[in-house]
Length: 330
Image 1: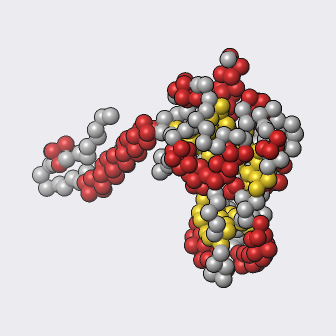
Image 2: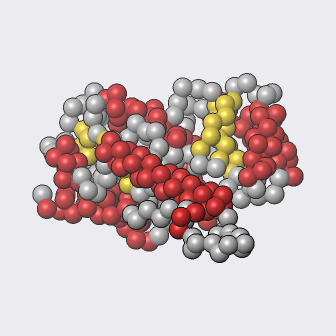
Image 3: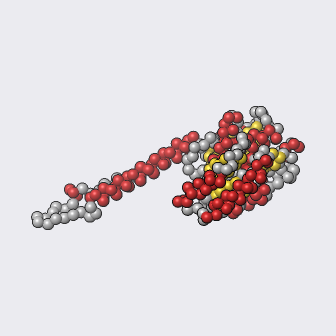
């Protein structure tokens, strides 16, 4: 990059006697502009260096696809997929987060070759209505509502097909009560929506003006202070309210592996793809197991326990296609 410095006094034409010349713009402005340009360039360089360093630690699962295949060779791949931000782009209206037909076919293709589960913070029925694939396992409400395939799956054992796990059933009346209270309390903040995900709640603020985010969180906390058995966590422009039990997406992953007959097995290779903080629980389980891989969907560097990365749902679709093609070559 060529360095452009401000003109100095020596750069100006010689002044005539008795007349005063002033360069334009003033030197102080030119110096400030040069400093701003330099600072902006340095910030951009620092961001590039940070991204490159992050990509070294969490390389693209597409670029390193052959390495993923090599690690999974001779083992049973089991696929776990988040929904929002992974199979569908993040949108302002949560009810409009519809997956494309192309993505649905990609997931269908994977499910033909590998046991496949959707693990989402959404209500299980709502996720099923988005995905519309009966041969999958569905774990809704951050894994607190798990059900096996409603259609025949060639990968499932008999007990796995009928699996149903709802470890937070006793909280259903409380969740409904808090949902009503939050809906009434947050009604005064334009753009705020409360989504009842059966065993948990989501307060979305993607459409809320940024200066009102703190007020919204304060309102949510004011309601929850009367419900000590519920906890508040944060996701991508969403506040999540869940029962305070030791159960998360990581527990759901372990439960499904056991239901599929892979408990304590060295012959399984779980692949979990997700984009949110709640998916970190699953990534951490895979790291502690020392088996399989976690793939974070993100365009920007984030602290994560995932091994690999993908930038957006379109890359997730490409990864799923490549996985199916690799199986067809076998």
